[in-house]
Image (spheres, rainbow, N blue to C red):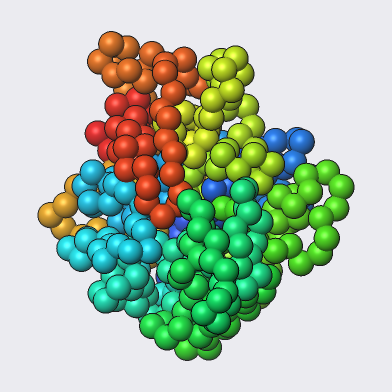
Length: 451
């Protein structure tokens, strides 16, 4: 007797089983998302990137358990434009944010822009923002009017307002003036002695001036509570955690140890904060939450020993003439930032990706993973890079080749040799727009993003 022919079902069923086993991207329910955005963190501030850094054991472990992206770029070399691009998936030349917002700014992220929080909330997500906002703090520019169900944090950078216990700065800033008429008032550029920094929960000021020494702990506790509330409701959640670290150091919880001193102590505090948020996410079940860690731009080199490490991104101009290649410039160190993605069972562990990616990619990628749709009738500069996250591909944005004379930075190579961009001014919006616009042009022309 001959062997009877196999039924098509006998072949199809085992095939489907094998496909299910080998398809880690198949998500049975909407995943949770946590985006942690560090402020002014250097590419070399992670030990996983730069061996000289010893203060980030938890972030290094996160890299070991997830994927590390070594060619990841912010959308601008300053704060507000970079954050606007993260939340819209669009460069500032499209979304209208090309300058930092100041304390006196009445506007913010234009209201005709759709934020990532708005798209995910429409898709059934509980949305929360904790930390620094810096996209407008009046009226409808507040986070709770831009798609976030819950907000806890400060409206702009923590050095854009006085406190009773100032953090570290260079030069140092004084505490808030006393309330008596004879109180001395110290006036110095970049110190805000007339406005006390507020801490807000939704639209209510809960403390003014904020106590900086407890800010990291408060952010951690609020993040844990938000995760627990969303889990109790059975809702997927999107948490945007915009840290105060590493802009200029807060008051470290312990006296600085040997090594990098105050900055190292602050870096270790940020590392511990990220570890607690990861632990809270894992408590819901490993594999239920995607965690994406990155930075808004490079370190603030003007702050000297209170600034982060650039890693290898210091070109010949900086070595020979002492210029800055960090924040506020279009040099590589101003916009190449650390990036880690952790999603057990879906994002490969222990992998290093060379793909050219950007903070612009977070919006379209998370929207796709949530099963939602991008807002119609607008151009996005980011890509859905989920194939890169899952390890199926190591191709991100394409590098456009062009004649070097077409753009002054195209001839500069990876770390640059053209004349440096000289940008000065405090975080509150003085002297920042040109650097933001220039780096966006650089990302378009040199990197080919969104074209």
